Image (cartoon, rainbow over all chains, first blue to last red; front, top):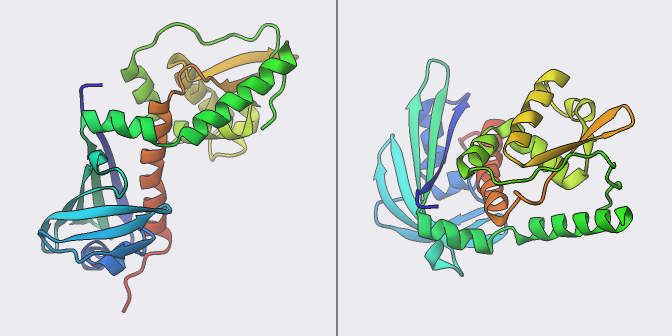
Length: 137
Length: 120
């Protein structure tokens, strides 16, 4: 896998762009949807820690363009080599607003993340197949 | 997690498929959800799956065919039923990781749409 892995989402939401921006531009806003807890000041160059899906992640704010976009890097606190870059872009829409989300995983770090994440599902599958094979045998 | 015995005429996914086909297959949120149901709940028919989604049975079958073409799902006939199951061969750590990373954004989008109102 030599290409970076990019995940994108365009989220249409029934809020004004200003309302949506308030959920993107503040740690308190992040806690409403992005992460469980956020101890971070969303300002260019700032760093902080968020709790995401039960795990701490370090966040470094790369850039804040007022009313438009926030970009940051974040990584699992115990695995600093697995940083990914996230950009959140707020745009007004005909009705409401749209949040464009992009998360980019560099290729090398994607491989590292593969090795470390969600082994439980693979283990569950292995147990499932093993059980099926015993029945079939 | 229990799993029924395989039917004798079950077709197995085999052979190598390119990764881009695999990633294309799981790029669709509905297909990811179908795959997750098969992973977590075991083999199901297209009719059973269609009850879980606002889709016709035919639409579900089409998604299943795409997943099967990518080697992520295999089908087997049990009596008059065709049952689909997730295949482990292609459900590598890469896919599990991708599903998780992608699903996290789906969950965040849901939270944003459903509950997030800015505080006054």
